[in-house]
Amino acid sequence: MSGDISKTNASGATEEVAVKTSGLTKKYRRGDVEFAALSNVDLTIRRGEFVAVSGASGSGKSTLLHLIAGLTRPTSGSVEVEGKRIFDGGDRATTIFRRRRIGVVFQNYNLIPCLTAEENVLFPLRADGRDVGATREKIRALCEELEISRQLSQYPDALSGGQRQRVALARALAPDPAVLLADEPTGNLDWESGQNVCRVLDKLNREEERTIVLVTHEPAVAIWASRLIVLRDGEIAADLPTNGFADASALAARCQEIARRRSANA
Image (cartoon, rainbow, N blue to C red):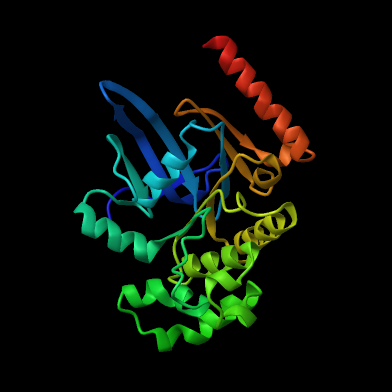
């Protein structure tokens, strides 16, 4: 692997870096007009961190997640996951690395409708040519932990939104990724189901030290993370620890204040 995967904190101890972006920029064209969805973003996420990324619609939060996932290539800059520059080896190498080391959960679940819940969960392992039999018991234990073991024989259209999202989460976790990325995972769920998904993510982070990066526009979801990155117009407007906020309302008020200050300085 290339790159430095550790950094030194204030006390002098060494911390491993899970994700690092340097000068990350993504530009698009609309007719003759070019615009930057993300502009020169430098970001470091430590292994075992739970980070939320928030911002208004069009702020670049989903673009950032897709770049970290290797789903789209940057215009310039780099992304490192576990010290590996994920775009250096071409599209096939990026796809293989993502399949093995990066788990992605989408807002719309992206489950395959003709496969059962269990077949959906096992799909990334089979696509990678792994021996499913050797991991089946581990996968079943994961599904039991996510409270979907009774739904494994059912097809996606027979599941509730919360159940579908848990199946999507199990599928993302099945290959045992180094980093779990979640793009608006509660966006299609009611409040209670959304908070249940947040509890699962929190438990994965606390008990298994999973590195989680979650994109959301909801303060009630962002408050579950230990750190909040606020994006505005493709740039980092703030990087906040969430433990200083009493509740989601206080966090929302702080984000609104950041937005007003940025607007006043624009």
